[in-house]
Length: 305
Image 1 (cartoon, rainbow, N blue to C red):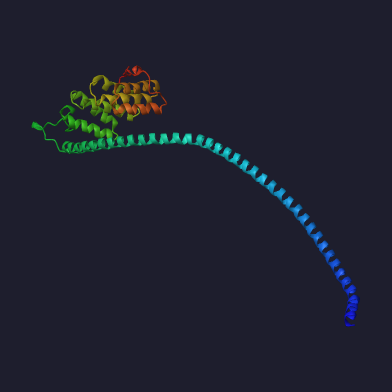
Image 2 (cartoon, one colour):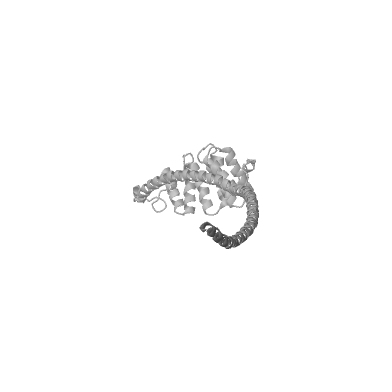
């Protein structure tokens, strides 16, 4: 009896349980289907966004490549431009460097000239010292001649009785102190009374230098001509006479004659300092260093003093 009852009871209970289970399964299946739809929709949206992002990334990559290309072209253009500009700018700098080298050479020459000038000044100072001693001797009272007669000229001896060195030094001192007329007179006396003295050529040259200092350029050119004519073999004084004559002609406004004389100096005394000085004068005048020097050979006509 009992087994039958059990089976009957199970038959009553099983249909309700099976129905309940089916309902829950259906709801679960519906939820799962909805979830699957949502996942599919999310996946589709994700795929679309990823495709968009990939497209944007590709566009950005293409733009970056294009920008790199443009930058490369611009860089190349700038490099070429810079090289061209630097080339055009560096050329004057190279020329300036060459000029600086030339300037250094000129400075060296100036230093050498200053050294020579210092040596000359030392000699002049020595000569001035000798002149001072000579002046002291001249300033000493002269002994009266026998019978109480005095020398002509208030006790001063005539120029012929003054020693050659003393007379030359006196003239040099008066020239240095600006007593030009007195210096010219003393130099002229020296040449007159001591024509064979080694300083006779210097005396004539200094006469021209004194007249040039006075602005008497025509007369100075004549004086330098006298040196050239009287002392052609003097290798120390005559080259200076040529150069100083050119300076006097230039100062007097005789440009053509001055240029010719400077060229004559260069041609006649190429190894002398005056040749280099003549070249500098021609360059300063804007004149070519080449040309015939014969035009300067004619002396300046002398006028009566």
